[in-house]
Amino acid sequence: MPNGIRSNESLPRIEASDALWERAARLIPAGTQTLAKGPGQWVRGVAPKYLRRGQGCHVWDVDGNEYIDYSMGVGPISLGYAYERIDAAVRAQLADGITFSLMHPLEVEVAELIRDVVPGAASVRFGKTGAEAASAAVRLARAFTGRERVVCCGYHGWHDWYIAVTDRAAGIPEAVRALTSTFNYNDLDSVLEAVDEETACVILEPVTFELPNNGFLEELKQVCRRRGALLIFDEMWTGFRLAVGGAQECFGVTADLACFSKAVANGMPLSVLTGRRDVMALLDKAVFFFSTFGGEALSLAAARETILELVENDVPGHLARQGRRLRQEYNGLASELGLPWTRCVGLDCRSLVVFDATAGDPLEIKSLAQQEMLRRGILWGGFHNLSFSHGTAEVEHTLAAWREVLPLLRDAVDTKSVRERLAGEPLQPVFRKTTGFHSKPRVAVAAR
Image 1 (tube, rainbow, N blue to C red):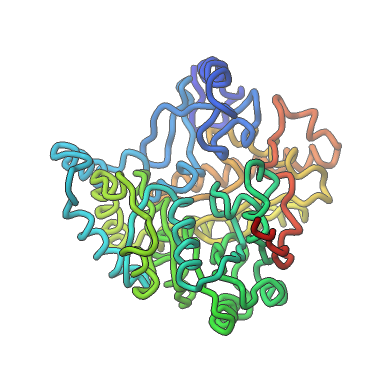
Image 2: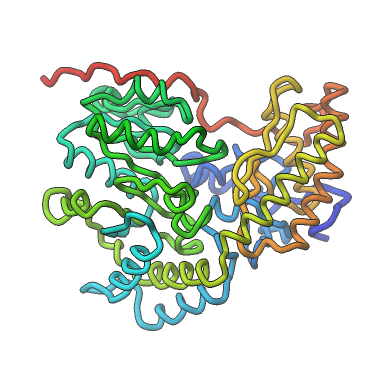
């Protein structure tokens, strides 16, 4: 019998998942299209590898096991799986067509809707992925300022200008690597060190799990203004979730350009680039950012209804209330059990459970926590990423699971038996090198 949303006696059986994985490993590089969904981010031999369907915030794997999902498609599912209002809009548009030989009215309608809810969205352009929207923003900034250097903070996708600062930079020319550096969040000194009169733009996730301190975002905006660089907010995670208008609405700081994806269309592939009219006007002729599928109508139909649903039902308020309860009660339980080495941090709508190295290998502890949450019918990859479909029953079951799992973790840490209790292989880090990228850009390679 497949596992369900309960304290299951056994770990889920995953024979069908494993059989699919064997086929994928022979054909697909790294076995997956999305790194965060791949087996390296889940306990190998324990976690399911393939999901078959979803409903609300519940998902079923290919072996029939049911889980409450706290990844939600790695961000895009803001309302819920198979959400009827969105699915009805997609079905209705599907009956008329998907992609056309001329423009579709939805391009105008959704752009106007985004202009009305997103601060600073004087102009709007659509894409398909967050990485391409961020790259288009960087190209715009370079064209507008006549400069080449980029300073970033956070994760911005797979394109050359960003991935050059990670240890997965094979294939990136040295001249390209030399043009990007990073700074530390909430560290104005590192900003002042990195941003100079040759900087085209500063691009960052305006908030991840650490809130901006002492007016950091406003100070950052002033530094950019003084030094002639554009400020770009990468709002892939914060847009339409932290508030309908994203971090710009939440913190009252408007960037020159802002990029969105994930939550805007409840799982349909769409990204959005917004910003100042004078900067975005370069997209008319000077800067080329066009694609065949930029005006694809199914995703735009989904986006229209998703945004309306977010506004009409104050979905960000619901996410905040449910997520705040999870975060606060997790921390209360950890304190009650005397566990100073774990805490739940971050935003109400998206929090992160962290484990300190003082208790042992954090990845191994996280792996054991994930394993035991899976046993209790919860698909948890480290985050509590909420959707509108996470109701009281799901939150209460999750807290009940943590009340069982945290004492197990305490005992494993106390007896130094965390690794022994894992029924599979522990999680793997995404990037081996994650610090030391905040120095000033290197001198560019001389043109030959």
